[in-house]
Each structure stands twice: as structure tokens, then as C-alpha cells.
Image (cartoon, rainbow, N blue to C red; front, side):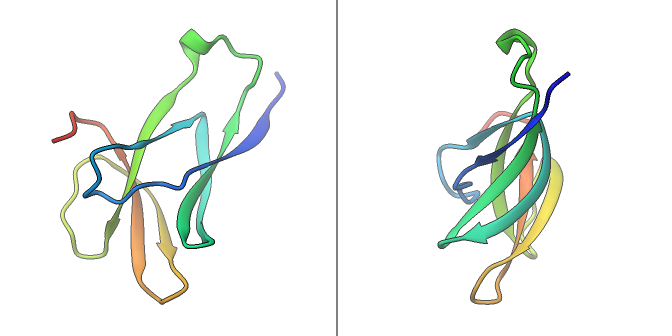
Length: 91
């Protein structure tokens, strides 16, 4: 099975009406040029019907969230954000 790392994003914050779709297994997140991005390991040979797709957003520290926590990112200004996979319907 071959694998490749793909970069996804920018990831939107929790107030946006959309999410970023991330395939595969997320392994890293950081701020790049003002946006938050996620890197994930993907099997490019896998049939599209079987690929895992995750809906990602980020939240500030102290804000309640629902979903699966993945990463913490400290941005260039020192603010701390948390990348979360949304597992319920979006508001």
C-alpha cells in the first residue's frame, strides 16, 4: 500500500458556514501565511468510496466545542487554536 502526505486548508474557524474536508489520517497542523493547515497521510490508490473524509474547523482556547480534538496550533501572534473534526450536523 502506497502512502503520501497531503496538505489541506486553510481550515476555517468555527464561526464559518463551511468546513475543510481532510482525507486520510491527520498527522500535523500549523499556521502558514496566516492560515491554519492540516497535513494528512493518504493512500492515493484507495477507491474514493472507501476514503475517510473528515470535516475540520478550529476553535479558540476556552470555547466549548463538539467533535473530535486533533491538534493545537499557536499562531504568529501567540493566539492558541484547536483543530477539531466536526462529527455532528453543522448549525
